[in-house]
Image 1 (spheres, rainbow, N blue to C red):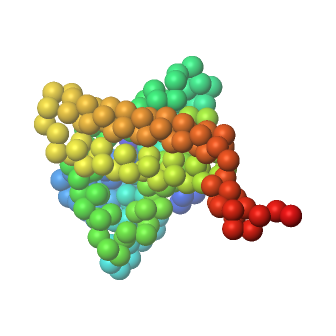
Image 2 (cartoon, rainbow, N blue to C red):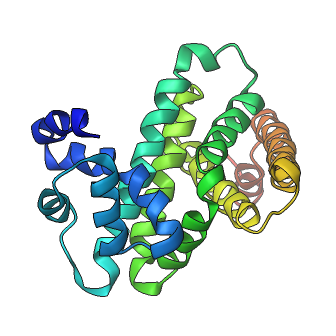
Image 3 (tube, one colour):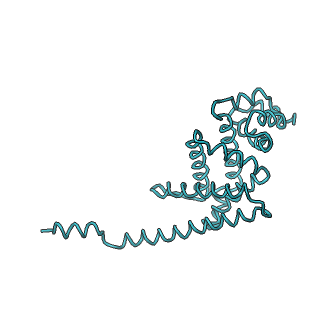
Length: 228
């Protein structure tokens, strides 16, 4: 793709990482997340292989692989944000907003599910656990922000933790799903979202009840130390 060479030449290394990431994922199906996949991606994209290696330098303990995976996740994040901005999602109910965003991410990697499988194996390695959690949180945070979430209390953190868990669990089903159109994956996703929605409704009722009921601690305190 020689017509793309000038674009690559003008990119920063950060931009180049994102641009090459989908091609690296396509190569990772066969080669894994390694230099072979990187060079194949550069060749397919028409990028300078030496610059590609500069964008993804070799690192110990699989650091280069994690850099490539992070760039791929970021590329999916960018595509999701472009396809489903807040104003478009605002037309949907909150449950459908979240489902739509997760479904978009699944559809974006449907043809490279083996690359997803390999990426998940790398991310599950002990040395990569903190970074993997950070990447999951980042994508979950973006999904909630696109869905219009403005919570700043503990709900901000619980929502993102729960969504990151749903997404990672759904991916685990996705990479092993041989049903037509990944039907089992979407059924699993719907069940998980339904479960969270029921939990949120129950939590809202409990919170409201706690607001309406007098404080038990205060009541017991008055029994022990009556006001004078």
